Amino acid sequence: MDSHSTTGGTSADAGEPGAPLVRNIRCRKCCRHIDTTYAFCPHCGTKQKSGDAWYYHPVWIAVLAFVLIGPFALPLVWKSTRMGVTLKLILAVLILAYTGYGVYYLYKIATIDLAQFRELEKLLH
Image 1 (spheres, helix red, strand yellow):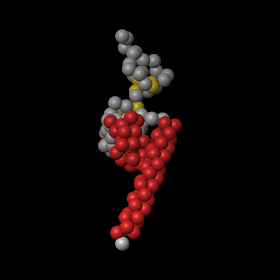
Image 2: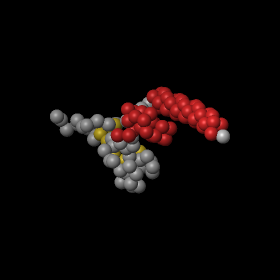
Image 3: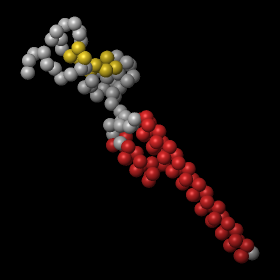
């Protein structure tokens, strides 16, 4: 490996041959330039990566939404960095449709139960 090779990125000064390559991004909060390897901004302390937790994975979002928390999983959908906008829209629509179906199903069960209670009340009087 020669002295000119580095790990990648953009050149600090494109006109200077052999210039070290610098990999910078902007902080999510203060917008100052920081190294891409930093997990936290050295200026403001903001965490730089989001969506890395297990619950931001599309499969786990679906499990949480369809089994446990329903529409309360929608913020996880929109904060996930593992999905594109199209997949986020599809998953959000599916979660909302599933929630709507669940609410409708519970409404139907409640009306049937109330009708049965009214019939039982008529029989007892």
